[in-house]
Amino acid sequence: METIDWSSLSFGYMPTDYNVRYTYKNNAWGEMEITDSQTVTMHIASTCLHYGQAAFEGLKAFRGKDGKIRIFRLDENAKRLQSSCRGIMMPELSLEKFKDAVITAVKKNERFVPPYESGASLYIRPVLFGTGEQVGVKPAKEYVFIIFVTPVGPYFKEGFKPTPMVILRQYDRAAPLGTGTFKVGGNYAASLVAGEKAHEMGYSAVLYLDAKEKKYIDECGPANFFGIRGNSYITPKSTSILPSITNKSLMTIAESLGMTVEQRRVPEEELETFDEAGACGTAAVISPIERIDDLDRNKSYVFSKDGKPGVICEKLYNKLRAIQYGDETDTFGWITIV
Ligand code: PLP
Ligand code: COI
Figure 1 (cartoon, rainbow, N blue to C red):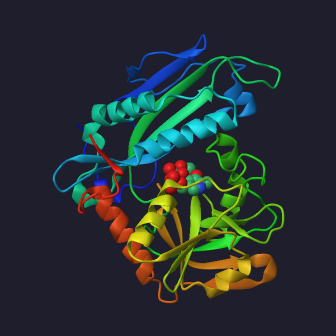
Figure 2 (spheres, rainbow, N blue to C red):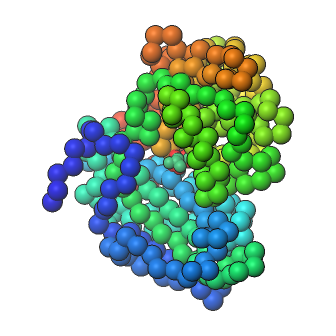
């Protein structure tokens, strides 16, 4: 077996032993297949290729000090995939089928779950897409669902270290009544140009404003935004934000630590008042924000002057990681042990 340098993994694709699949045909999902093939064959008129009829998920499995493998909030990802399916007219996959597929994919690739000490994890990527042929703009009649897994390190190479983000007013990620609340491929295609631009300028991600008024904070690249002011955890509410399972978990953790949680519209000017700010997501975990530059307004909101994460970000991060790795008892019922 090849040796993997677990602690220097980045967030990228590494082939693993197996992936699991279901096919939808004749109005029904079939039985699970397990394969070592890393490719799919599909019709040249598949709706996923032409019309972006495709949705995905992202969740993680962690190896604890006790050697056990823990999957974080599996049911929430299953439900969100169902919501994405409704959003772009794909057949929903049952929670049971989703759960079986995740557990099987992890078990079959157990040797790729990074050791506890490495701080890395196994990223689980479910994807569901239209493979039936259409030329008119219509939903397909056939679909494929696949789960592959790959061991990963931090999404932002700096890990748990504050990085700068940027507001680029000439780009939107999602429209207020569009598909932003669903985890569909098109949203990510729509974010590529702005993301690359931000990276070229030395920023780790784009902080999007609401597309209609350009007034309120929306999301940070592939992650939700939160700000900390005093004892409050404040996170934007909008009709174009993907409901992050990490954010939902952090809100629960913040409340359990006696903090006040506010989920509401957050005007850009309010950035001025935050003591700390962060991006959160499965891949991003908590990525503290060093500063946010609004280039067109010539404004800079600074959250970390010394290059270190703030104390609340650190507290939330430690608590979340402790639950995920099994260092602390999971009192919320978030963990599935494989
Ligand atoms: N927002 C976007 C646009 C994302 O792609 C993700 C990643 O899944 C998130 C937020 C964070 O969501 P979660 O915490 O469920 O991973
Ligand atoms: C995740 O956090 O799981 C994501 O999907 C983010 C990104 C890699 C698309």
